[in-house]
Image (cartoon, rainbow, N blue to C red; front, side, top):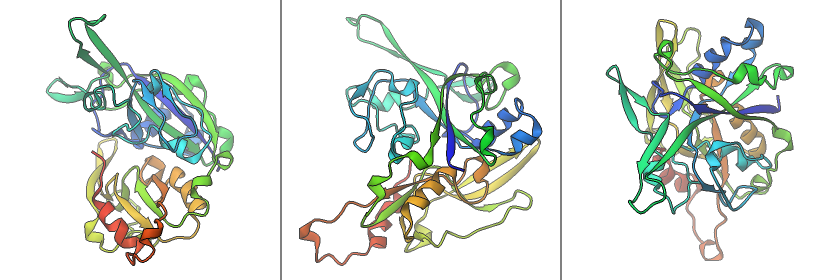
Length: 320
């Protein structure tokens, strides 16, 4: 299993659902309306991250550089491991500093029948002397799929187009249009930033499930290859998986938490983080990113601070 299919949907109507992302469970079930049962069982879906269709600048670790107009509205080429995470962080660090970041990386909230919904577009007023009196930012959902049967990918545009996510779908909410899709071979990516690293940290892109009420799910402990001095420092979050009329609670380590890495196979671990680990990984949970720890300078040679202590301060860094 070395290939993933990235998918970029444009929101055409407001979304009523999880405030941080479209869950992989929602994407998986939406695909079930388009696929036959046998094919559907082999599909694994990531969480879908919300992305504003705004101008942006490629990050330093990205294989490309420079500014791109409306960067968030399409998928860039994927050449390196770090490229995969350009649109997987909810604070959108690629947005230009010259634009109102605090406004552009946050959805408008509109109430629909008393329920808060994330608006499918953000409309901002502009100064009186501007050529246009308002600026409209459209929102997108970025996700990726992988399959236990690699021959199933890529899914056709007719399967991916027109999916609906979230609540009140009978009233048209959560409607999307397929904007872009591409297949990425994980073995063909450049992992040079992870080669020969002095140390590594792991950043949870989506929550890692410890306990689940879902039938036949196995409860697990924090993985042995996480370097954590005190598990009490890890921020937890209660999540839910909905199956029809049944709702199952999940106890998770929250997305955005950063821990140390005690393993010795960073590149293999990085690939596993893309296809996800742990309970409910099929539905988007357990995605993480491996990052190299910057090498200490000559003036720090005598520093006896352990890697786990360096990371301990990082465990409180969480996504908004």
